[in-house]
Image (cartoon, rainbow, N blue to C red; front, side, top):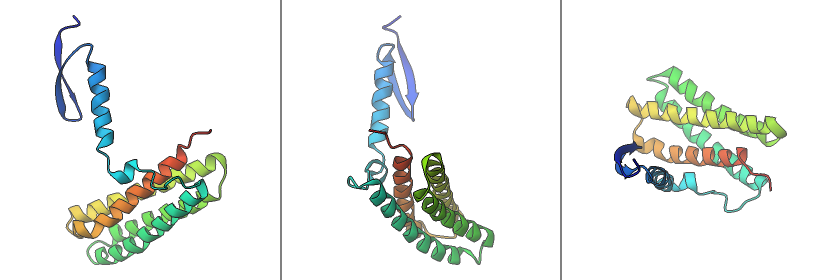
Length: 164
């Protein structure tokens, strides 16, 4: 029944394919999705930097996010003090775990980087909640969301470095 066609949906795209073509179509759609990722998520952002240079670049970017998120948290504070506190704690945790990972070894280093990624994602979620609840305008958080995306991408690369 090789010639029988079927309807397949992958990431919202519906495709009519033959049995032989299913895997090829699925791979193609996945490649298209990967190509559509933001440049900050695809680009190594480090321009071939050494590990220590990449870590310092990520650290500096994280400190910029902290300064901005703390200012935004001050705006959110009068409307939702718990959310403002969560924003500050998540953002601080991102930087503190990153710093701890920079001076750890082996599995602990990777574990701290994963913790830092989790805190960065939590910070992003806090910003999304602020926008959804109309406490902050989207335009006010866009730059921080891009920075956080770059931080997460950089940490991911540090966690998944291949040994040469």
